[in-house]
Image 1 (tube, rainbow, N blue to C red):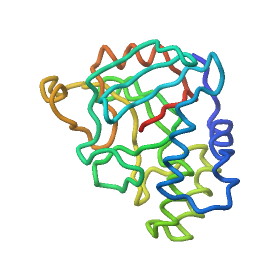
Image 2 (image 1 turned 90 degrees about the vertical axis):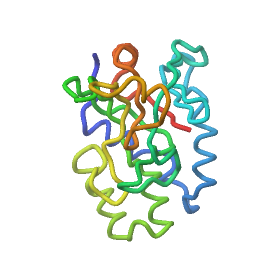
Image 3 (image 1 turned 30 degrees about the vertical axis):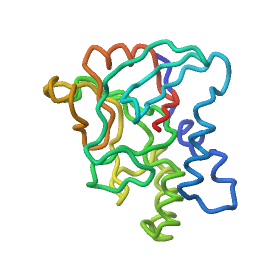
Length: 203
């Protein structure tokens, strides 16, 4: 498996075109971002689309569907653009895979780079982040190569398996604290198809 260094990953993430925009980030900006995000970057791009409305996770190669997993489970607090720590919501947005934990209590944990610069900008505009929080977010990101996980926006968001979870509950309810859950065989298959830096869109 080919890995990006933390520094290179962080520079790629912080180079997002959103940071070049002069207009305030907002829910409508998130809508625009999601509309653009579901278009592959190039013909052979391997990327993932998580659909809240369908409770499904799809893996694409460009525009070609490779795999579809359903039903999936999202956060008990639903899915929304502006997540906050403790609300158990799954954040909407465009993310990148930045780590794999194969010793997770959820079998395999595929970490995402939440909160992204988009979420930080939205938090600032909504008054959830102070200017100091916002500046500290980018300072941390530049220093470590990944976003801080302990701000008011929460963290540790990813795609994971069930581990010791109840398959019956998984089939019937959204049960996570904000992550995307699939079965253990599905997360094994997913982790074989993607890599560090793979785009993951949750909408």
